[in-house]
Length: 94
Image (cartoon, rainbow, N blue to C red):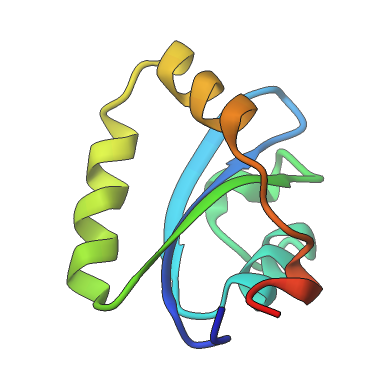
């Protein structure tokens, strides 16, 4: 995956809640969340773990998918996380 690919992602927070967002630099964004420099929501729920992501050609498509995921039930998000097999971030797209 190109480092500047538009992505929607889902994190599992330390309090067992999910956070969904979008970025065009997934590895840096996850690092920022874990450094406390990400979203206000995740700042008090560290550490976070990347449990799901999807790549899109446009920011608009990524934002649309983010909204769709945020509307899912917790059970549906858990299923997405369980069924997702992501390569380690350093090896994405290689």
